[in-house]
Amino acid sequence: MSDEQVPNVLERDFCATAPNQKWATDVTEFNVHGNKLYLSACMDLYNGEIVAHQMARRPVYELVASTLQEALSRTECTAGLIVHSDQGWHYKMQPYRAMLAQRGVKQSMSRKGNCFDNAVIESFFGTLKAEYFHLAPPNSVDELEAGVHDYVRYYNHERIKLRLKGLSPVEYRLRRTA
Image 1 (cartoon, rainbow, N blue to C red):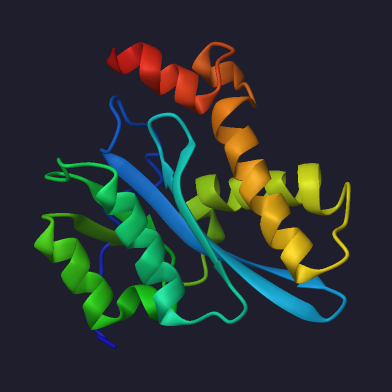
Image 2 (image 1 turned 45 degrees about the horizontal axis):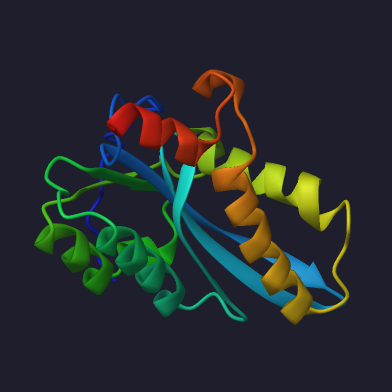
């Protein structure tokens, strides 16, 4: 793990004028009858689309690494991309930083203990928990995992947003980039 300080490049500027300019990423925890599931998600700030997500039963480095790999595999052009996270230990790992550097991606991190610096992804987690997890609590971690996959698909393809002119994130991206 590197102790090198990473600046808050994003500085709460959550607006992007095109896809793959700014991504926000984080991990959240779910608890189902004492069993935990961790969700790592990466959001494109252009349209709020979840461009990658992975789940694991433990908060291991591979969880965030596989999320980043999935997100990066979706695009050829990452020059100028900023990936913003909190100061979680996994984002400070040298292999994580190397993955970013290999693709010319700039890393940005929230200030210590300041959840508002990563508010967009925190807000997504809150929405997911309010609209799925707390509304229809799953009975098992397997059921939760399937439900989270379904919710992310719904969130990206069907759930409309006023700031996107009443379109879903995917619809907005497809119309704007066509």
